[in-house]
Image (tube, rainbow, N blue to C red; front, side, top):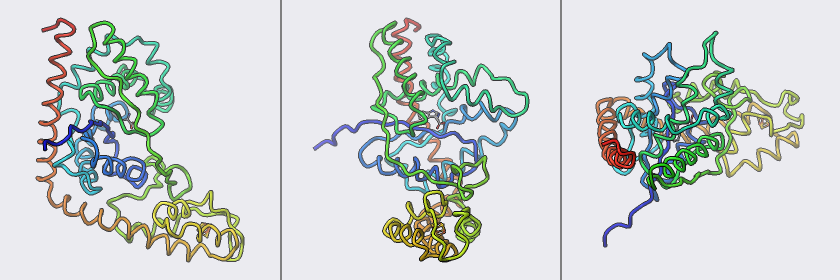
Amino acid sequence: MPPVARKRLLSGMQPTQPQLHLGNLEGALRNWVRLQDDYDMYCCIVDWHALTTMIERTDEIYENSIGIATDYLAAGLDPERSVIFIQSQVKEHAELYLLFSMVTPLGWLERVPTYKEKRDSLEGKAEASHGLLGYPVLQAADILLYKPYGVPVGKDQIPHLELTREIARRFNHLYGETFPMIENVLSDVPILLGIDGRKMSKSYDNAIYIADSADETAKKIQGAFTDPQKIRKDDPGHPEGCAVFHLHVVYNRENKDTVEAECRAGARGCVQCKKECIEAVNAALAPIRERRKEWEANREGVLRILEQGADRARAVASETMKEVRAAMKLP
Ligand code: TRP
Ligand code: SF4
């Protein structure tokens, strides 16, 4: 029996850091690994998007991309099934971006919340660029080039997907039915706090990385933020604001109710609690870290996968571009 055609999904991450942290792993990557059993996954490393915030550090972007590909593979994305590729290696993204930029009214872009946030947080006195405003247009091109069924992303990306549908609708209206209306593929992902109790993020310097050693992980968790009102073991604690408890919820699921109850009752000390947390996190990450080491030692292999990924992506993207040019009568 021929295999049933599987629906396609596309997602992407920006290579703004050399490695992915547990927030990226639990918030997105693990979900992609699960989804590849049922969907054709296109996993893009969107290096041109990283230019919007790294214009003075462009020399870091390519190495970051390779680090992120290494983490994708370590987490279990299977390069036989899933297409892993770097955006800038498929030039069709740039062409569709340009064409979409002509059908996208400025007002749509100025309303996007991430634009306002990024504009206001630019380093130094940098002025917002054309590219920053156009960020979601490039994202729409990333997505629609592959005519996917949907896009697995976090809630923060919903405005970008809404804009993608608006661009598709406008294009279809002007030039005839070309692009599908994509679905938001949202998943119930846990929020991981960084070791200081804020959202886990490279820029807060509070992240635990996939590539960290077990020892580095232990040191970070030993120094993690806990309930400041809980000083002695028998003080009743408030686990909800405790970074260690959040790690227990994700990595020590079977015992999280016990941890919570004992913390509240003053029947558990933070030192012991952290010790258990360290064991659970390191045990859960061990196979991923093992695989990461193997891929790290096989840079050629990673580069080959990215090259093959770009070829497979380009095969789809160039077909879409033929249709787009034909629809616009731009042969
Ligand atoms: N904007 C996304 C983010 O910051 C990254 C991204 C770029 C993306 N192109 C995409 C995500 C296409 C999904 C699909 O996370
Ligand atoms: Fe956090 Fe555990 Fe201490 Fe409670 S006992 S405050 S959950 S580290």
